[in-house]
Length: 185
Image (cartoon, rainbow, N blue to C red):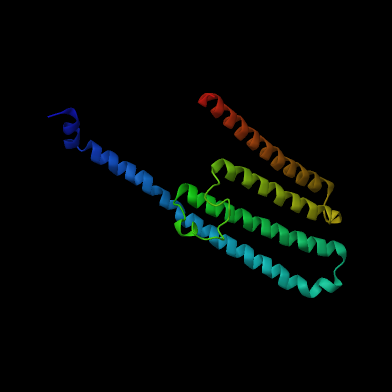
């Protein structure tokens, strides 16, 4: 009996295949998380329309600052929704399964199915910086409601997001250059 045949009889390949199948199938444990993100998107939509419903009757009494704050709030909610969608689609397609029925759909977003983990990180951080920037702009529109200490912390946090984004982009750029050097000309 050959060595390969004897290993089939001791159960090792069966255990190995079972373990690999279990590890491979474990990706489906993330599916409920993505369903939760759909629920979170629903919450953002409800919040968006609640803001509209509560503020529209007051629009004629609002001054310019209040209208800008309302618009910034709606833009902020929209960016948060876009962020959830990007994570939902990219995460599911990268880690669980491809969304097959959407391939033939002409309305399929161009980035869908092409965004890798590195691209997801950059989009995620860019979205967080944009959301933070809008939040900071809303704060600056209402300076009288904040102390100097609070303003300082909001600016520090925003700058931290910006620095983090630049650092992640730099690390991705360095990693890409390193891969090109190892691949050769």
